[in-house]
Amino acid sequence: MKCLISLLVLACTSIPALAQVTSLVHKEEKRRYIVYTPAAYQSQPQKTFPVVFNFHGGGMSMAEQMLYTQMNKTAERHQFIVVYPQGIKQDWNVGFGMDYLAGTDDVGFTQAMLSKLKQDYRIDEQRVYATGLSRGGFFALRLAAELPQQFAAVVSVGAPMPEPVVQHHQKTDKVGMLLIQGTADKVVLFEGKAASYLSAEGTFDYWRRHNGIEGARPQPRLLPGPAGDATQVTWQEQGAGTGGASVALLTVKEGGHTWPGADAFNIGLPIGKTTRAIDANEVMWEFFSRHRR
Image 1: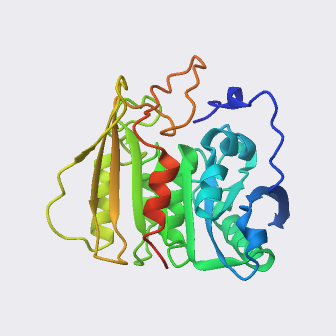
Image 2 (image 1 turned 180 degrees about the horizontal axis):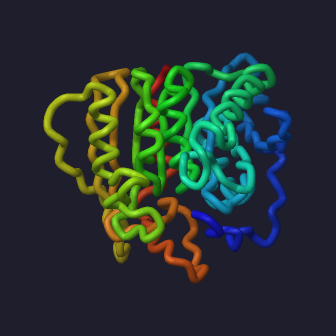
């Protein structure tokens, strides 16, 4: 999603009072991230809170990801902490354009953030999750592969499984996995790209195998949408029973390279349609809430 949403900067980008920009030094580089705490964090001092890492797309900033996804509102409703990290040069290392092992150590940065969050906030360590859009979604999938002992579930939006992650995936721990992908996405193709990333359905099958889920692929279930919406949303999910690491695919027919339910922006780039049939934040929180490490 390189140079996609620098135009998404809303007229004023003041960060809400409950969101704080903080930083740490990782490998001699100052790295920044926003931490949003719901009001309940102050009013319930004995409670620990789930955490959702929300990674921006390529060319975006942490503030733009916060504004575009509007996940803070969902965090208020469901009482979880949201972390919006900032990538170096607005990018994440997923093996495209930089060396997977020798490039930017974003996995180590994520581990450092999580360690600092555990020191600074009341974190429910069994309920740590990751999501991301486009390049950030690719990176969330890398975290699922490399840090499954820390992330209970991951949701990737507009980003199927990267081939470099497949090649380096050695951990056997199961992770809850949801992929949200538009069939008309012209930035990251639903059908995949040879030597770059799997198809959406190939990603679904990959994680089904990894999580030890047997049986035929389930039939898609149509989700109702508002009248006049040009998109159509279907849901497929298989799991290992209550408490198991399930795998799901949410397909947005005619959907573009967008965050479902977010404000649609006509910025002259081929990002396509935004579905109104679902709110991605609500869908992913419902999925996250069923998974614990």
